[in-house]
Image (tube, rainbow, N blue to C red; front, side, top):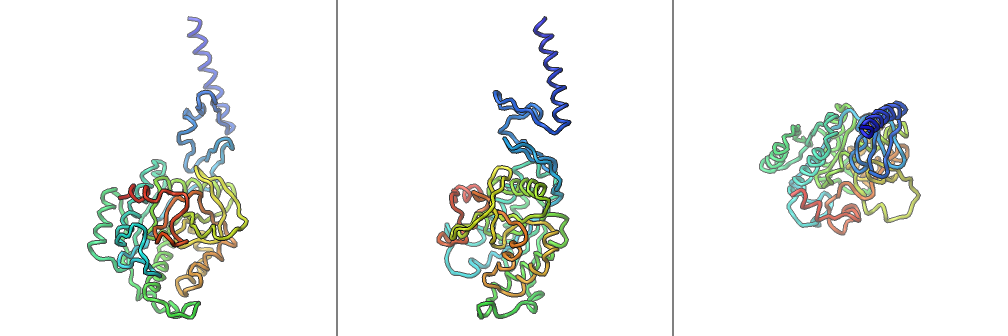
Length: 340
Protein backbone atom coordinates (compact mmCIF):
# COMPACT_ATOMS: atom_id res chain seq x y z
CA UNK A 1 0.00 0.00 0.00
CA UNK A 2 2.84 2.34 0.82
CA UNK A 3 4.37 1.91 -2.65
CA UNK A 4 1.03 2.70 -4.29
CA UNK A 5 0.71 5.92 -2.31
CA UNK A 6 4.23 6.98 -3.28
CA UNK A 7 3.43 6.19 -6.90
CA UNK A 8 0.32 8.35 -6.80
CA UNK A 9 2.24 11.14 -5.09
CA UNK A 10 5.03 11.00 -7.72
CA UNK A 11 2.45 11.03 -10.50
CA UNK A 12 0.75 14.07 -8.97
CA UNK A 13 4.06 15.93 -8.60
CA UNK A 14 4.99 15.01 -12.16
CA UNK A 15 1.79 16.58 -13.49
CA UNK A 16 2.44 19.74 -11.47
CA UNK A 17 6.01 20.03 -12.77
CA UNK A 18 4.81 19.51 -16.36
CA UNK A 19 2.25 22.32 -16.01
CA UNK A 20 4.87 24.67 -14.55
CA UNK A 21 7.44 23.94 -17.25
CA UNK A 22 4.86 24.29 -20.03
CA UNK A 23 3.79 27.65 -18.63
CA UNK A 24 7.34 28.95 -18.96
CA UNK A 25 7.82 27.40 -22.39
CA UNK A 26 10.23 24.63 -21.37
CA UNK A 27 10.22 20.95 -22.24
CA UNK A 28 11.42 18.13 -19.96
CA UNK A 29 13.49 15.37 -21.56
CA UNK A 30 14.14 12.01 -19.90
CA UNK A 31 17.42 11.01 -21.52
CA UNK A 32 17.11 7.50 -20.08
CA UNK A 33 13.83 6.70 -21.87
CA UNK A 34 14.28 9.20 -24.77
CA UNK A 35 10.93 10.69 -23.84
CA UNK A 36 9.90 14.34 -23.87
CA UNK A 37 7.73 14.18 -20.78
CA UNK A 38 5.96 17.49 -21.33
CA UNK A 39 4.86 16.37 -24.81
CA UNK A 40 4.35 12.70 -23.95
CA UNK A 41 6.40 11.78 -27.03
CA UNK A 42 9.65 10.03 -27.87
CA UNK A 43 12.42 12.28 -29.19
CA UNK A 44 12.34 10.53 -32.58
CA UNK A 45 8.63 11.30 -33.06
CA UNK A 46 7.10 14.46 -34.58
CA UNK A 47 7.79 17.03 -31.87
CA UNK A 48 7.27 20.30 -33.75
CA UNK A 49 3.78 21.72 -34.20
CA UNK A 50 2.94 23.58 -37.36
CA UNK A 51 1.91 27.16 -36.68
CA UNK A 52 3.01 27.02 -33.03
CA UNK A 53 6.51 25.75 -32.32
CA UNK A 54 9.63 24.35 -33.94
CA UNK A 55 11.68 22.10 -31.66
CA UNK A 56 15.20 20.95 -32.41
CA UNK A 57 17.28 18.92 -29.97
CA UNK A 58 19.36 20.11 -28.22
CA UNK A 59 18.80 23.70 -29.43
CA UNK A 60 15.34 23.92 -27.93
CA UNK A 61 12.14 25.57 -29.06
CA UNK A 62 11.43 28.37 -31.52
CA UNK A 63 8.03 29.99 -31.03
CA UNK A 64 6.36 30.48 -34.40
CA UNK A 65 5.51 34.14 -34.89
CA UNK A 66 5.06 33.76 -38.66
CA UNK A 67 2.62 30.85 -39.14
CA UNK A 68 1.77 29.62 -42.63
CA UNK A 69 -1.93 30.04 -43.39
CA UNK A 70 -2.16 28.64 -46.89
CA UNK A 71 -0.12 27.19 -49.72
CA UNK A 72 -0.84 27.48 -53.43
CA UNK A 73 1.03 24.94 -55.54
CA UNK A 74 1.26 26.14 -59.13
CA UNK A 75 2.67 23.52 -61.48
CA UNK A 76 3.60 24.40 -65.05
CA UNK A 77 3.16 21.51 -67.47
CA UNK A 78 3.95 20.92 -71.12
CA UNK A 79 4.00 17.24 -72.00
CA UNK A 80 4.52 17.96 -75.70
CA UNK A 81 8.06 19.33 -75.24
CA UNK A 82 10.79 16.97 -74.05
CA UNK A 83 13.50 19.54 -73.28
CA UNK A 84 13.10 23.32 -73.42
CA UNK A 85 16.54 24.32 -74.67
CA UNK A 86 18.25 21.09 -75.73
CA UNK A 87 17.64 17.81 -77.55
CA UNK A 88 19.28 15.50 -75.00
CA UNK A 89 17.22 12.80 -73.32
CA UNK A 90 16.43 12.74 -69.61
CA UNK A 91 17.58 10.15 -67.13
CA UNK A 92 15.68 6.85 -67.74
CA UNK A 93 14.84 8.17 -71.26
CA UNK A 94 11.05 8.13 -70.91
CA UNK A 95 8.44 10.26 -72.65
CA UNK A 96 7.96 13.70 -71.07
CA UNK A 97 4.49 12.85 -69.74
CA UNK A 98 6.02 10.15 -67.52
CA UNK A 99 8.07 12.78 -65.65
CA UNK A 100 5.00 15.02 -65.37
CA UNK A 101 2.92 12.21 -63.87
CA UNK A 102 5.60 11.22 -61.39
CA UNK A 103 6.15 14.83 -60.40
CA UNK A 104 2.43 15.21 -59.71
CA UNK A 105 2.30 11.98 -57.76
CA UNK A 106 5.40 12.85 -55.73
CA UNK A 107 3.98 16.22 -54.62
CA UNK A 108 0.64 14.70 -53.65
CA UNK A 109 2.44 11.90 -51.79
CA UNK A 110 4.43 14.51 -49.92
CA UNK A 111 1.30 16.40 -48.89
CA UNK A 112 -0.39 13.23 -47.65
CA UNK A 113 2.77 12.14 -45.80
CA UNK A 114 2.31 14.58 -42.90
CA UNK A 115 -1.11 15.00 -41.27
CA UNK A 116 -0.11 18.38 -39.83
CA UNK A 117 -0.38 19.85 -43.32
CA UNK A 118 -4.14 19.45 -42.96
CA UNK A 119 -4.01 22.51 -40.70
CA UNK A 120 -3.25 24.81 -43.65
CA UNK A 121 -5.22 25.41 -46.83
CA UNK A 122 -3.52 23.84 -49.83
CA UNK A 123 -4.69 24.70 -53.34
CA UNK A 124 -3.34 23.03 -56.46
CA UNK A 125 -3.28 24.61 -59.92
CA UNK A 126 -1.95 23.13 -63.15
CA UNK A 127 -1.13 25.58 -65.92
CA UNK A 128 -0.76 23.52 -69.06
CA UNK A 129 0.45 24.32 -72.53
CA UNK A 130 -0.28 22.09 -75.47
CA UNK A 131 -0.55 18.72 -73.71
CA UNK A 132 -2.79 16.21 -75.45
CA UNK A 133 -6.24 15.43 -74.14
CA UNK A 134 -5.14 11.91 -73.21
CA UNK A 135 -2.19 13.25 -71.20
CA UNK A 136 -4.40 15.74 -69.39
CA UNK A 137 -6.71 12.86 -68.56
CA UNK A 138 -3.78 10.97 -67.03
CA UNK A 139 -2.97 13.96 -64.83
CA UNK A 140 -6.62 14.19 -63.81
CA UNK A 141 -6.65 10.51 -62.87
CA UNK A 142 -3.77 11.01 -60.45
CA UNK A 143 -5.56 13.83 -58.65
CA UNK A 144 -8.68 11.69 -58.46
CA UNK A 145 -6.73 8.76 -57.01
CA UNK A 146 -5.52 11.08 -54.22
CA UNK A 147 -9.03 12.54 -53.82
CA UNK A 148 -7.55 16.00 -54.34
CA UNK A 149 -9.18 18.89 -56.17
CA UNK A 150 -7.19 20.99 -58.59
CA UNK A 151 -7.74 23.72 -61.14
CA UNK A 152 -6.60 23.20 -64.72
CA UNK A 153 -5.71 26.33 -66.67
CA UNK A 154 -5.11 25.92 -70.39
CA UNK A 155 -2.47 28.48 -71.31
CA UNK A 156 -3.19 30.83 -74.20
CA UNK A 157 0.24 32.03 -75.32
CA UNK A 158 -1.30 34.67 -77.58
CA UNK A 159 -2.36 36.63 -74.49
CA UNK A 160 1.31 37.31 -73.71
CA UNK A 161 3.14 37.26 -77.08
CA UNK A 162 3.05 41.01 -77.61
CA UNK A 163 4.79 41.58 -74.27
CA UNK A 164 7.73 39.28 -75.07
CA UNK A 165 10.83 40.71 -76.71
CA UNK A 166 11.62 38.57 -79.74
CA UNK A 167 15.43 38.86 -79.41
CA UNK A 168 17.18 37.71 -76.25
CA UNK A 169 20.17 39.04 -74.31
CA UNK A 170 22.52 37.01 -76.52
CA UNK A 171 21.16 38.63 -79.66
CA UNK A 172 19.37 35.45 -80.71
CA UNK A 173 15.77 34.96 -81.76
CA UNK A 174 13.62 33.70 -78.88
CA UNK A 175 12.31 30.20 -79.68
CA UNK A 176 8.62 29.38 -79.65
CA UNK A 177 9.23 26.92 -76.81
CA UNK A 178 10.88 29.63 -74.73
CA UNK A 179 8.06 32.05 -75.49
CA UNK A 180 5.47 29.54 -74.23
CA UNK A 181 7.61 29.00 -71.14
CA UNK A 182 7.73 32.74 -70.46
CA UNK A 183 3.98 33.00 -71.01
CA UNK A 184 3.42 30.15 -68.57
CA UNK A 185 5.53 31.88 -65.91
CA UNK A 186 3.55 35.07 -66.53
CA UNK A 187 0.27 33.21 -66.02
CA UNK A 188 1.71 31.64 -62.86
CA UNK A 189 2.54 35.05 -61.44
CA UNK A 190 -0.97 36.30 -62.18
CA UNK A 191 -2.35 33.28 -60.32
CA UNK A 192 0.03 33.97 -57.44
CA UNK A 193 -1.55 37.39 -56.98
CA UNK A 194 -4.77 35.59 -56.05
CA UNK A 195 -3.01 33.57 -53.34
CA UNK A 196 -3.49 34.05 -49.62
CA UNK A 197 0.00 33.30 -48.32
CA UNK A 198 2.73 31.01 -49.71
CA UNK A 199 3.16 30.00 -53.34
CA UNK A 200 5.16 27.07 -54.63
CA UNK A 201 6.08 27.50 -58.29
CA UNK A 202 7.12 24.10 -59.64
CA UNK A 203 8.00 22.70 -63.05
CA UNK A 204 6.78 19.31 -64.21
CA UNK A 205 10.08 17.42 -64.04
CA UNK A 206 10.90 17.72 -60.32
CA UNK A 207 10.32 14.55 -58.32
CA UNK A 208 9.91 15.15 -54.59
CA UNK A 209 10.83 13.16 -51.51
CA UNK A 210 7.97 12.21 -49.21
CA UNK A 211 8.98 14.78 -46.59
CA UNK A 212 9.62 17.64 -49.03
CA UNK A 213 6.47 19.76 -48.60
CA UNK A 214 6.33 19.43 -44.81
CA UNK A 215 10.04 20.19 -44.51
CA UNK A 216 9.63 23.36 -46.57
CA UNK A 217 6.59 24.54 -44.57
CA UNK A 218 8.13 23.83 -41.16
CA UNK A 219 11.43 25.40 -42.22
CA UNK A 220 9.69 28.47 -43.63
CA UNK A 221 7.87 29.04 -40.34
CA UNK A 222 10.99 28.46 -38.26
CA UNK A 223 13.36 30.71 -40.19
CA UNK A 224 10.83 33.45 -41.00
CA UNK A 225 10.03 33.60 -37.27
CA UNK A 226 13.70 33.67 -36.24
CA UNK A 227 14.71 36.25 -38.85
CA UNK A 228 11.45 38.21 -38.75
CA UNK A 229 11.32 38.38 -42.54
CA UNK A 230 9.88 36.56 -45.55
CA UNK A 231 12.23 34.15 -47.32
CA UNK A 232 12.55 32.11 -50.52
CA UNK A 233 13.02 28.34 -50.52
CA UNK A 234 14.51 26.36 -53.37
CA UNK A 235 13.80 22.63 -52.77
CA UNK A 236 16.66 21.40 -54.94
CA UNK A 237 20.35 21.00 -54.24
CA UNK A 238 21.58 21.74 -57.76
CA UNK A 239 24.98 20.38 -58.80
CA UNK A 240 25.97 23.69 -60.41
CA UNK A 241 26.00 25.30 -56.95
CA UNK A 242 29.19 23.34 -56.28
CA UNK A 243 30.95 24.51 -59.44
CA UNK A 244 32.55 27.42 -57.60
CA UNK A 245 33.65 28.01 -54.03
CA UNK A 246 31.83 30.85 -52.29
CA UNK A 247 30.91 31.99 -48.81
CA UNK A 248 27.47 31.05 -47.52
CA UNK A 249 25.35 30.84 -44.37
CA UNK A 250 23.98 27.68 -42.79
CA UNK A 251 20.54 27.25 -41.22
CA UNK A 252 18.79 24.47 -39.37
CA UNK A 253 15.36 23.49 -40.65
CA UNK A 254 13.06 20.75 -39.43
CA UNK A 255 15.13 17.70 -40.38
CA UNK A 256 17.52 19.15 -42.97
CA UNK A 257 20.39 21.57 -43.11
CA UNK A 258 19.91 24.56 -45.39
CA UNK A 259 22.35 27.00 -46.93
CA UNK A 260 22.06 30.45 -48.40
CA UNK A 261 22.28 30.47 -52.21
CA UNK A 262 22.46 33.28 -54.73
CA UNK A 263 21.02 31.36 -57.68
CA UNK A 264 18.16 29.02 -58.50
CA UNK A 265 16.07 27.87 -61.41
CA UNK A 266 12.33 28.59 -61.68
CA UNK A 267 11.11 26.09 -59.09
CA UNK A 268 10.90 27.80 -55.71
CA UNK A 269 8.58 28.59 -52.79
CA UNK A 270 7.99 32.05 -51.39
CA UNK A 271 5.29 34.33 -50.04
CA UNK A 272 2.78 36.56 -51.77
CA UNK A 273 4.46 39.49 -50.00
CA UNK A 274 7.75 38.76 -51.76
CA UNK A 275 6.01 38.40 -55.14
CA UNK A 276 4.24 41.72 -54.70
CA UNK A 277 7.39 43.45 -53.42
CA UNK A 278 9.38 42.43 -56.51
CA UNK A 279 6.52 42.20 -58.98
CA UNK A 280 8.21 44.11 -61.79
CA UNK A 281 11.43 42.14 -61.34
CA UNK A 282 9.58 38.80 -61.55
CA UNK A 283 7.56 40.05 -64.51
CA UNK A 284 10.73 41.06 -66.37
CA UNK A 285 11.58 37.36 -66.62
CA UNK A 286 8.41 36.93 -68.70
CA UNK A 287 9.14 39.80 -71.07
CA UNK A 288 12.80 39.29 -71.90
CA UNK A 289 14.97 36.21 -72.15
CA UNK A 290 17.92 37.13 -69.98
CA UNK A 291 21.34 35.51 -69.87
CA UNK A 292 21.05 33.51 -67.75
CA UNK A 293 17.28 33.17 -67.97
CA UNK A 294 16.88 33.37 -64.16
CA UNK A 295 18.94 36.56 -63.82
CA UNK A 296 16.02 38.56 -62.30
CA UNK A 297 15.69 35.91 -59.58
CA UNK A 298 19.39 36.14 -58.79
CA UNK A 299 19.09 39.90 -58.42
CA UNK A 300 16.27 39.42 -55.90
CA UNK A 301 18.45 37.00 -53.92
CA UNK A 302 20.99 39.78 -53.38
CA UNK A 303 18.35 41.48 -51.22
CA UNK A 304 16.28 38.57 -49.89
CA UNK A 305 17.34 35.27 -48.34
CA UNK A 306 17.07 32.23 -50.62
CA UNK A 307 17.97 28.83 -49.16
CA UNK A 308 18.58 25.37 -50.58
CA UNK A 309 18.57 22.02 -48.69
CA UNK A 310 21.44 19.62 -48.11
CA UNK A 311 20.71 16.93 -49.22
CA UNK A 312 18.08 17.72 -51.81
CA UNK A 313 14.32 17.52 -51.22
CA UNK A 314 13.43 17.44 -54.92
CA UNK A 315 15.40 16.17 -57.88
CA UNK A 316 15.34 17.87 -61.28
CA UNK A 317 15.17 14.96 -63.72
CA UNK A 318 17.14 16.25 -66.68
CA UNK A 319 20.00 14.68 -68.62
CA UNK A 320 22.45 12.93 -66.32
CA UNK A 321 25.30 15.16 -67.52
CA UNK A 322 23.48 18.45 -66.86
CA UNK A 323 24.85 20.54 -64.00
CA UNK A 324 21.32 21.98 -63.61
CA UNK A 325 19.78 18.62 -62.90
CA UNK A 326 20.43 15.58 -60.76
CA UNK A 327 21.29 16.47 -57.19
CA UNK A 328 24.34 14.85 -55.55
CA UNK A 329 24.09 12.23 -52.78
CA UNK A 330 20.50 11.26 -53.61
CA UNK A 331 19.26 7.82 -54.68
CA UNK A 332 17.71 8.89 -58.00
CA UNK A 333 16.40 5.44 -58.87
CA UNK A 334 14.67 5.11 -55.50
CA UNK A 335 12.80 8.40 -55.81
CA UNK A 336 11.88 7.47 -59.38
CA UNK A 337 10.45 4.10 -58.37
CA UNK A 338 8.63 5.48 -55.33
CA UNK A 339 6.47 7.56 -57.65
CA UNK A 340 5.77 5.02 -60.37
